[in-house]
Structure formats: C-alpha cells, structure tokens
View 1: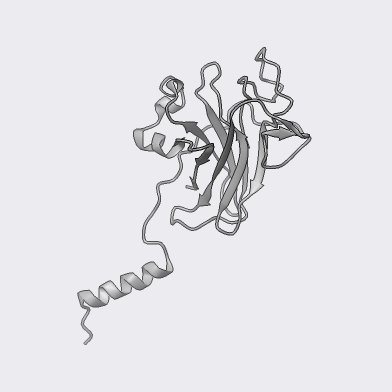
View 2: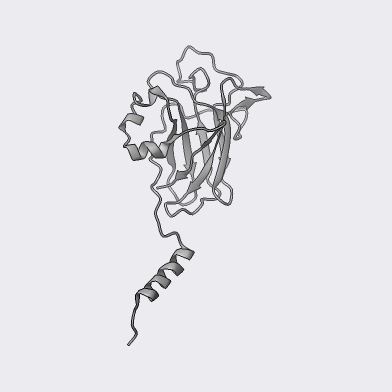
Length: 195
C-alpha cells in the first residue's frame, strides 16, 4: 500500500503550478458599448488615433498599452483590440453625436490592433476628456477566437467627474480599481482580463 505524504502532495502541487497558473485573475468588468461605436468606414485603420494624414490631434498625447489575458494569466495572442473615444472637444466621430463642437480632423476617433504572442497591445491616442454626463473614458472591444466579444471602458484616476458618471458610480471599489488607470509620463497601462 502506498502512503501519501505532505511532501508528495507539495511536490505534486509544485509540478502542476509550473505547468499551469495556480491562481485566477479577477476579470475586467464588462461595460456597455455605448451609442457612438463607429459605424462608418474610416480613412485610416491603425493603432494611432492621434494623427490623421500627417495632421496631429488636439489634446494631450497618451500611449495606452497592456496585455489581454485569460483568468488563468495566460496571454491571448492574436486578439483584435479596438479603442474608440471622443476627441479633445468631447465629440465622437459619429453621426449620432449632436455636440455643437467641430470634430477634430487630426483625431482618428477609433483604432484597432492585434495582440502579439504575449498578449501585448498598444495605442497612441489622447488623454480622454469629459463631456455631458460622462467622466473621461476610453472604450475597448476585444474579439478573440473561441470567446464571446468583450466590451469595457477605461477611466482616468483623479477626475472629479468619475463619481458623477452613471456607469462608474455603479461599480464596486474593486471593479473601479480594475478599470481606472493613473497615467505616468504620458503612458497608461491597462490589462484586460477576459471573463
């Protein structure tokens, strides 16, 4: 008869954890797509929202980078990541946006990229600004093979409008922490953990 010791159990656990993650990441909270998801063809389809046809966007430059991960911490390679947001005047490049502001011709408003082998993505854009009823935010949509489409939003720490935002204010403290970034030297890190 074989005996099962604590040492054997520990060795088995270490072996299992070296092959697979032994923890689960909290998923990024899903959020609504919103009414201004791009519905028309754009002249440029890339990950640089801050420049169109050589013309720079108005606003504060921001690089947003991160990884798309599974709850087990594995990178999701080959995922399509889309980002869209309002321009520096708080206007979306969308026909349903009835803001009186003139759209910024140097701002693309929407971008897309594909994650690399380690799940990395990166966008060049501008620091989001508030507009009527909403805190500064960026929208993300992720499409990955074998998974349902995932939509979320990223918020910026320290904005007075965060507490009054009807979506942000409904989040728990833990959910807010997973959706809120604090840019440093023009870079915001935002990992997306798929549910």
